[in-house]
Length: 87
Image (cartoon, rainbow, N blue to C red):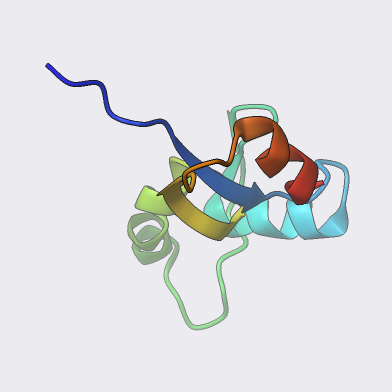
């Protein structure tokens, strides 16, 4: 069995004490920083039961932005260089 190359991804999540984090967590009904289910901020015109279904999948991952989907590093590149670039 051949071993596959490691894959990397770049994500952004706002600080857990920020207004943006609170907004995203309320939108999903889940605070990924604490692992707690929280009350939904259901958008006007939506039913809470429908909103729960709509957000079920993203709730598993918490509020974040995917900046770069999973990828393999190019030949000659290493994790240290990627970390330095991402900071």
